[in-house]
Image (cartoon, rainbow, N blue to C red; front, side, top):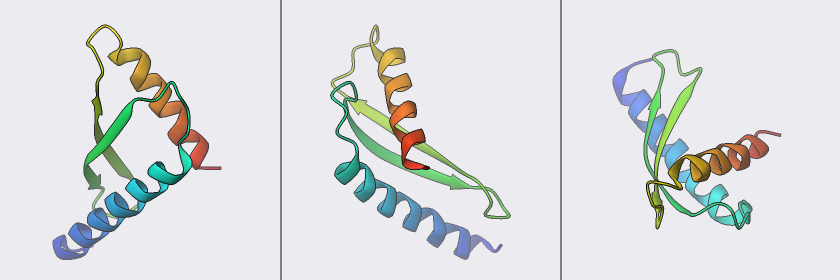
Length: 77
């Protein structure tokens, strides 16, 4: 997959996932998150999503991160 196509795919995933999260994730354990970046593998088969958590204190960040992963895993089904 060429670099331009990967860039467009990454942008589309970021935009769509942001919309889905804002509509679907209603878990009170999940802080407000902002998706910051998406990296797609050269073949386009996998994507890694990076995010920041607003209002998370360092002590709580591991717990918040776990809650976010659980909610996002639920979106796969």
